[in-house]
Length: 317
Image (cartoon, rainbow, N blue to C red):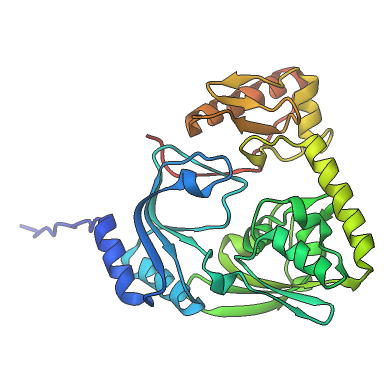
């Protein structure tokens, strides 16, 4: 008789075990929380809890968290400031790593270059450049995100895109090794940097040019006024859909008469058709149903497939 061997599946460690074990591998300055509501960390104010939320205090701590996740087969997600992100109501399994520690938010001016950590707020990058009479990053002022998120998404506004102004970037692979590369050697796409889907941005150098502060302020004021005229103030995740090419997504949605269309408290903004706003208490399921409805209307009426720009993360309830 042929002997048989039972194959035992080793379950993922519980969130308590994950948090406790991560704590043994990082410095005491690292923040670790269990069952952290992701609604606190997204601009849409929506999202269930992350099993374990970590704010590493150093690059070494980031590397150690990644190595732990690899060893224990624990999934992880790198969080920026939570714009362009929709977290499902069931939350996120595993570890959410956020580079919000001050160590990753530094901005240093070196001549005509800005050396910025991945956690630096984009608004602060533009303000620091202005303070030093440096032009080129004014368009970042109105993007509600961090440098790391802007790099991953090749975020843009006012006709400019992040990688158009980046000279070099520093990043980490999932084994915890650090790399530096010229931006010219990094392929990018519309609203995406494929490299940073499998690597973690740690920082970037922005190339700028001298310009009188009054000129920079004038440009930033014009950008700000245009943004507030064309974008809603209510909580949102930014643009929901990628522009399909033939027509901007917002214009298409407007022409289809879908502004103010709602599912529960999730509503298509009356200000800009490519924004879904949270009128208060909206769930991720509300937003996802509204997205599906818009896509169906666009397909039926114009034979246009709308693809989401926003990242959808997590599990259903």
